[in-house]
Amino acid sequence: MTMDRPNVAVAAVVLLVAATLPAPSWGQQQPPNGNKLITSTSGSGKGLSKWLAMNQEEYVEKKALHTMATAEELGGKKLDANLTAAEEAKVTWVIDPKGTPGDTTFTTITAALEKVPEGNKKRVILDLKPGAEFREKIFLNLSKPFITFKSDPKNPAVIAWSDTAATRGKDGKPVGTVGSTTVAIESDYFVAHGVVFKNDAPMAKPGAEGGQAVALRLFGTKAAIYNCTIDGGQDTLYDHKGLHYIKDCLIMGSVDFIFGFGRSYYEGCTIVSVTKEVSVLTAQQRSKTIEGALESGFSFKNCSIKGEGQIYLGRAWGESSRVVYAYTDMSKEVVPVGWDGWNIAKPESSGIYYGEFKCTGPGSDAKKRVGWALDLTEEQAKPFMGTHYIYGDSWLIPPAGTSTSSSSSASTSSNSTAEAPTASSNSTASANKKESNSTAEAPTATSNSTASATTSNSTASAKATNYSSSSPPAKGK
Image 1: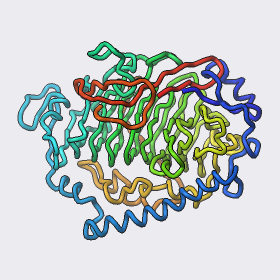
Image 2 (image 1 turned 180 degrees about the vertical axis):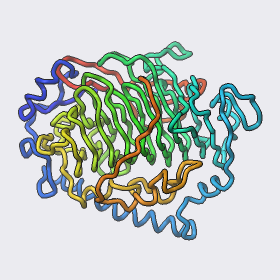
Image 3 (image 1 turned 45 degrees about the horizontal axis):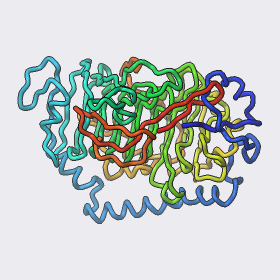
Image 4 (image 1 turned 60 degrees about the vertical axis):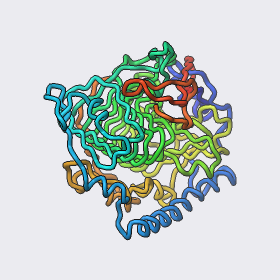
């Protein structure tokens, strides 16, 4: 996708990064309010004011309705009834590359998933041998919910593959962005703990066609990822669709390496740019009306952003893109303007919602942000700061083998609004560099996902990148 760049107020930044940024389409407009973030007492018109108000109203109304419905439907129980039943019937299978195959022991993850019945109704925990590397391309079908991948965060199992969007499939055509995925999860209620998800294809040069290389794609809803490493280059984590909780994880990449249109809450994660050129952390997609955009967006709390190059917090993959950072530490590599409007002609009057709340570090200077970014008040930030954002009270559970207090802060963080940041326990997993009937909106250039073997007819399109020397990485999803 081609990105728009701020000009006048940020000319110095443009000059600094001109040698590494792709084709300019940052509009040639001076952001409203000069070079300052929009605050709660200012705005850029009725559209933005409406957008701010709707986010707050949606938080109050939808949370109340969800709580009432859950209580009524489940007789006052918190957990969703299907999840409760699945947890009560859980089984554990061992996955060991050197093990002896049996009823509950498998040498590959693929073999174990094939054993899971269609319409599965019990939690199946795949206990991956610590330290083992599984060279597999995994596709978890939507008909097989309640699956857990579990290993040891101190000595994690690694699931790795090396496809890119340009890799040729069995039909001789490029597999595209979706088809490049190492681990694709399309079923609901997925949990991972202490695992490395890696796409170890060689790092593509900025602008290289077909360089997208997804390590993990989450298309199912109610997925939770704890203490994992998600390692890749361009498009590392495809946060495709659904409610997702990503806690204490290490996420590594270069361009748009957290992208998609999920409604997801990232807590205590370390996010690392691995390129010395321009890096863009998020490309959150939302192109519908403002009303339709409320169901998606990325929220980051108590996270840490660091690494190499010139780091942008995000760019708009659609006119209602929504990303919020709260209590997040930002290293000096984060560019002063912070955000990129991509090809949105007038970001200040669109449905884009890019906000920050009480972030810290040398890269968090609110006074230098683009004029259409938001310096949120506590009331405006509250809807995004807690697992209530993803309705976690009805489905979040601690990973297998851990206690609630030592793993998921699901129950406590849902009431978390403006407390001071806590030290995160980021994943200790060491990581090296780098479907399905999915009709969801996705990047341009169709692909047939090869999934676990090759069965996944995804209409999600791949991204074509066209870089030049004067603007951030171009993107076509």
